[in-house]
Length: 96
Image 1 (cartoon, rainbow, N blue to C red):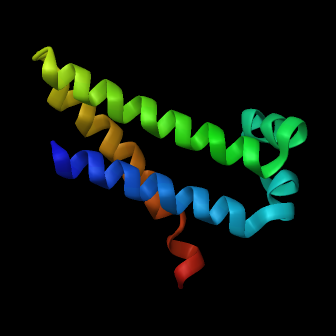
Image 2 (cartoon, rainbow, N blue to C red):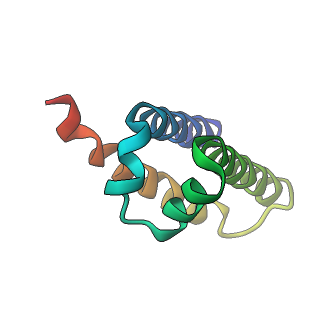
């Protein structure tokens, strides 16, 4: 379970880093309307803050599910890790 949380946090940090790196081009090329809205109202600090808050919330919820012995905790964590894998794979073309 700890590795899954670490995996999720690492991929989220990578995604936030690429958002900062892309900077001004992100508002033009981004397809997610929530990201565009965050960039318009608060710029990059608002976007990175939202990413950190979202990742923190996910990590906290995983910890609470584990603490409360939620039956489907492993399934929820697996889905979160798979989504993070898709995010990671979306960056592969940049590395080639």
